[in-house]
Each structure stands twice: as C-alpha cells, then as structure tokens.
Image 1 (cartoon, rainbow, N blue to C red):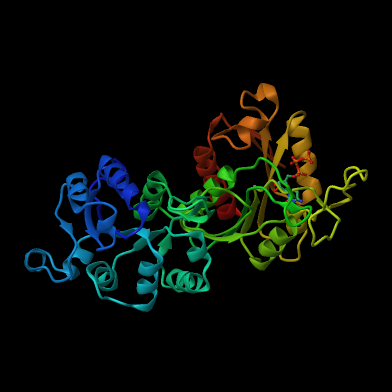
Image 2 (image 1 turned 135 degrees about the vertical axis):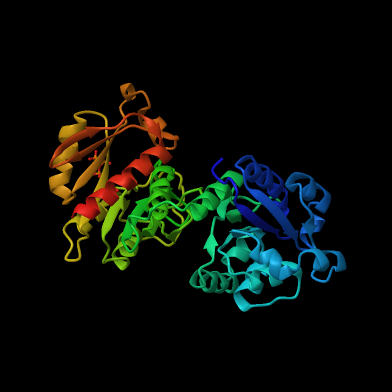
Length: 408
Ligand code: CTP
C-alpha cells in the first residue's frame, strides 16, 4: 500500500479522457489512498458524479456555491484537506485558468486556494496542445511549480488525428503521484543530470526517415528514477510514444544533431547519461522535396555521413560533467567492447546490454521490451546485474549514480 493514508483531491476536467479517471480512482484506492473528487460541469458531460462517487466512496463536489457543500466542506477546506491535488484530464481551458489565476468555478477556485502540490495530466487535441497559447500556459505553470504527467503521443479518441495530447495512462499517473508523495531521502538534490533517451529520426526527405527500434523506456525510466532521488533532470528525448517522465524537464528532438545541441544547452551538469540509441549516420541529401519514383531511374543512392557522437563530444567537453555514463548494445565480447568504448568516448561507466540472442532477452527484447540485463563496466571492473524490469534497472542505476557523485 504505497499510498497508505494519503489524501488525494482529484479534479476531473471536461474531456473524453475523463473516463480514465474511474480507473485512476480505483488504482489509487487499491494503494491505500483516500480519493475525494471535484468535477467541472463539462466533466459531468463525460462521466457521472454517481459513478465517480461510487468508486471514490465519498461525496463528489461539483458546485462552487452549494449550500450543502459549503456548509459541510468549503472550497478552502477542500483544497487544504489533501496531501496532493491532481487534475486529470487537465483541459486546455483548465490549464489557461490555472496559469492566469481565474477562479470562476469550484475546480479553478480550489486550485487557486490550495497550498499543496499540484500534479496535472493534460489531455487535449494535438493542435490545442501545440497551440502557442497552451505552450505559454504550460511554461507559466511549470515556473509556478505545477508538476506534469504526460501527455503522450497517440490516437485521439474523437478524431483520426494522431499526435501529442493523449492523457497519460492511469498507472503512469499513479506512478507520478507516488513519486511526488514519497518522503524518501533525496541524495541527488541540487544535482543537474542530463539524460538522453529514445531513437533519433534522420530525414531522407520530408516524408521519410531512418530510425531504430528504441522505445525510450529505459532512458525515461532512468530520468524518472533520478528525479525521485531529487535530481534536476534534463531529459533530451528522441521521438517516442511514451509520456514525459514526471519530475524531469523534457526537450523533444528528432535528429542526432538536434539532440547534441539540446544536450550542450543543458551544460554544465553534474552528470550525463546517454541512453539514447542515436543513429550513427544521417543522409547527406539536403532535399526539401519528396524523392519521386521515376520509371527507368532505379532507386536513389543515399549518401550517408556520420552523425556527431554525443557521448564522446560530452566525454571530451570543456564543460565535461563529473560523471559521464554511456550505454552499449553488444552481441559479443560484451565486456571488452564496453571497455574499449569507455576509453574512446571519455566515459566513466558503460552500461552494457547483452542483446545477443542467447542473452535470453535478445535485441528485439531489450529494444522496445520491458526487461533488461546489464553489466556495469568501469575502470574498476565489471559488475553483473541480474535481469530485471527496466524500472528496477533504472532505480539501481540512479542509486549507483548518486553514490558515485557523492564520492566524486
Ligand atoms: N551515442 C551517442 N551519439 C552517437 C552514437 C552513440 O551519444 N552518435 C551513445 C549512445 O547514447 C550510447 C553509446 O554512445 O551511450 C553507444 O555507443 P555506440 O558506439 O553507438 O555503440 P553501440 O550502439 O553499442 O554500437 P557499435 O559500437 O556496435 O557501433
């Protein structure tokens, strides 16, 4: 019961993703949390207060001026009698109200009146999420200390559009809540740590690109684990389909060159961990037009050029962090290859994945899968870790990084 005794005020906004809140309430209560809910009037168009009340086993608050509610629990008390406020789904409208201090209904008033941490799970149409107004509001909210979980990329419920804007899944929101409410020690407080994650996409022309199977799961899990230990995490992520991890500041990039630029923009840092599967090459063609298939011409010859090695650049940088960690995907001579990489790339540690078929997980299993088996290679030697979930590997690696930085 990881949330035993915790009181969560869940503010449900008016979006189709509101239905996921029913599951969220259940998941939170399973973990021992007391969940009290407030719904905007738009939210009640998507789920009924009856269903929300049945699952939360509490009165559901819907009105700012409700004689019954005011008499019983006013909006000030509502906002103070919680350990955490969670807004899910956080619509563009709710975000705008929060950013600008509007308080014209129960939800927005409670959010203005609170002195408790606030976590929001945005959900909206991808165009609305990309709109400059939403971007401005997001920046304001981040500056105000509001924490975000998601949104993720995916299909939108109401249209055939895909893109960023889908609400984080209930279990991701639960994980973000657990991370926010845990009172564990913060050995990485005050440390800035850069993490790269995911694949890169190298364009061939405006519609085609070269990519790889990296899902970003290991890098994102590490970013979250480092944030849980109190680090100021700067995640630079290639294109992935998973939500930004809670507690980290995420920059989204597409290509290796953009990734390097975003990493350098975050220097100086105390540590940098390069989990991303960066494409080693990009095409040299600088074409703004789609390459056409022409009869008799045959396939185009793609001229490739090498991408910058981000790990190696930072490993030899004038602003090199105290601790530089790389990853290596190997199928043979895992340790020897990792050792060679240490020296060549200027890293202190290499986390070597055995992606060979007989590792039991295999390349297809590690890349995109949920489990990993790694060896930690450093000048001091090799440490073999048992196969585990990527979250567990991340937690252990975060602890090792904390230890290394403490003794550096
Ligand atoms: N890396 C990087 N920039 C690149 C290529 C790799 O930062 N352009 C980083 C990766 O994030 C990872 C490590 O370098 O930390 C992996 O190095 P790489 O030389 O690509 O090794 P492998 O993927 O193991 O492959 P190989 O040695 O077989 O090329």
